Length: 360
Image 1: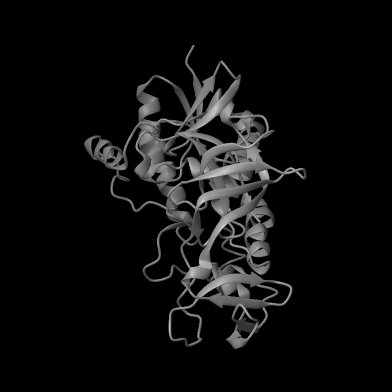
Image 2: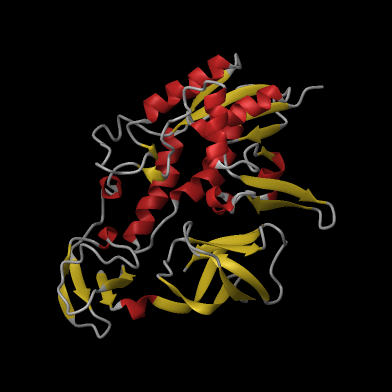
């Protein structure tokens, strides 16, 4: 019996090639794509000049058309599921709340956990779609380990495009359902394959950001003016809202100094932005909460591992200590620059994701 696969099509080259691989492997494919952009709620969003392409914004319509055309090429059933209300109430609200609280959110991780690998599958089942597994164009690998009885999330074989960071909050149930055909490919190989079979998405720009415009367009409430201060509390200037800043930011501070200043702290209670010289950005420890363990059931004793504190960060060696309240303390072997509250910290043992949580 053919394996029944539901594939999430984004309209981009990666999911298009994943579909081609699955069709040629003899699977019975149904395609689905999710509509998350509400043009009535956000009618005037425009792409910022020079911005990277994003999955949320005015290009949504074109992506939906491209996804449908990929499905037509392979003569596979195709469904568009409107999840824009849920996305607004959950992912965008999380995004807004985090910025207003002085933290830097990661909406792509939340979207994968709650929407793409969550609600999208539930709504597909409601449509009567039968499937054994759900496939996407992500660059990562999932394997079942008989020795420990758990599904493992692993880096892509070619780490330059590895996206395990963005999948690190998926549950064991979610990991048990997914199929990642591109885990062993490089991006150039995927584009070359698309070109060789004449896929119209072969040169399409990939989505690299959650939103293609100025993220402040999405924050409609609670933005207040406040002070920019140094680490001694001395007022150096004023700002138009802490949502305009993130840890490590240097440009656009509007204060002068004899050496470059960087944002080192955002305080929602005092509405202050604290700045310091570059040395003030380095820390050797952090607390991480809201943990999702993958290769282990729970952390019961300290372990040595490598930790990534943002997507483009090079993993760094650390000792990880369990805390009584369920959080963990991460102590790095070497101080790390711009540890940012709200960002995901992902723990690796070689190419295996041990678990992940959000930086306090």
